[in-house]
Length: 415
Image 1: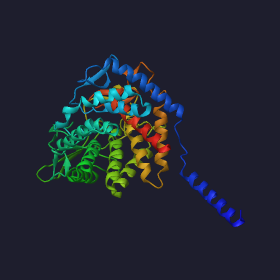
Image 2: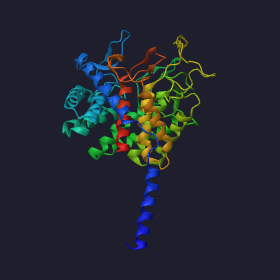
Image 3: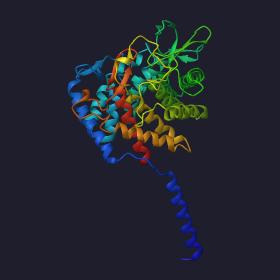
Image 4: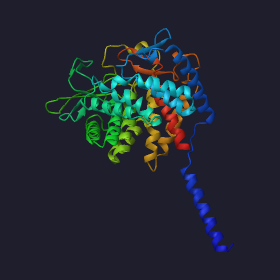
């Protein structure tokens, strides 16, 4: 071999080595840890299926006696149970999990016409959206399209938003006539999907307008988010910026921040508009750098809980707790969102590393259930709504869903 040719080959190999080193992931989740999580999930969900035989009752959380608490098809969480089964099938490729996932997904069919709230995206895309990855069904497509049609019926051009809830009172007795919550960012993925498969831009255009309005009105200067923004439907003017599930109107409810990180990342993926990626990144920076974030990266239910200067804007007495409850569901949503965000950032290593730290914590005995306990859910220590006095330090079905989704995204990244 000529010396010059040998020098070229050596140079290419050296450069390739540097490139590979630069692209490698310094943080990881061991295969042993992933296997343990999937083993727990299979054991827990096998038991869940044994006790959950009524397809009109969807597992959501625990009752006080440790039994499974179910909700009806109208509840916003119904799609997470079949969605979790789909992710378990992704990991195991076992026919039994696919069969269970199909059965529970199809139980939600009539929900495609639900126009009573904004959560049809959660309900139908987490179920049918995952199903259609495996089963190329025209019927499933039509169900998702109809679900998107139902969702955009809640859109108002003057407010530039999709109405989240119907008229309701705030904790300080304001009346919200057109309340929009940060959670609604999670329902936009259904609309982007509908435009892609129909060729009709109406769904995508509404999703983009909703995201623009949310970016304008929900975010504070530090990129924390208000939970609820209420609009005047005659003028589109903001009437109230408040909370329904956080500590106070000026605090940061942890899961609300997680919804924003995840939701704006999805909008960037679907539009390529850097404004949304920048917003997601800055919301993530707020979350990651918050001085009240515990060392294990699992946030308190509200970032400002226990901090001076923040007190509840509602009547429920949180001081009854001898500790500040965590929210594993917020951690799982954030980890999943960050793993997607990482793909779009040339210098996104810190987001990847943070997501892996979070998933390693969730995979530890501190948060991962012992088989046969925890009402047959996977994760412990989530918090639904302390102001309402409900679902405090319990398992939540959506914590399981986003935990499994995050692990699936990690697996794709490393492969």
